[in-house]
Image (cartoon, rainbow, N blue to C red; front, side, top):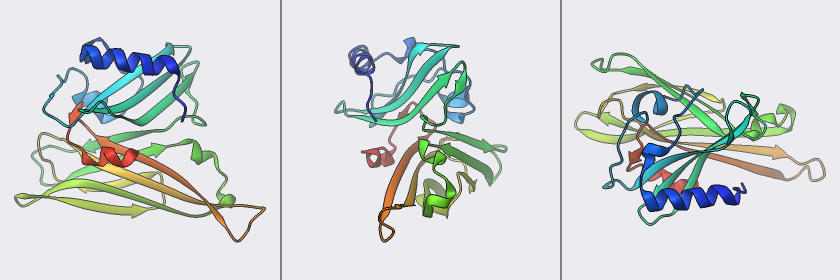
Length: 212
């Protein structure tokens, strides 16, 4: 995806200042990231990545939101982008997810739900030969952390979750669509969409590097 030059300039300014407090308050989103952890969370510069969110355009009319992870080496990994027209998401251009984790954190098992969207959702089902989606996330079992995997072919994933570190969540979604080509019926076009998912503004989410 081509990022406007003005967005790149803003990123450089953010990296110089290292101050996320001046970013605009997130709005009109149900992502647990905003609701729980990103509202007033301070940066932890000991972590591998810092999450930044940028708003470009005029709010309440037509604007764009971008989310990226910035590494200690100043590498930028784009994760989500949402385009709005008159306050309504333009799903034909947007790539984003929503994460919900429900239950009492003292419960042994919590219920999680991730829904995600991308411009590829506009591809007619008749053109999709097959689709492979996997969610990988870090889970606490006994005194160890393990990676759990769920496979599906739907845009909504439900999962059980054992809380650790006060509802922190670290995960990654891979969404692969194999698309039929009318002119070459013996071949398939592969469409890829990846999401790094976590609930912290500063994170050691190693899955981020898979966004490249």
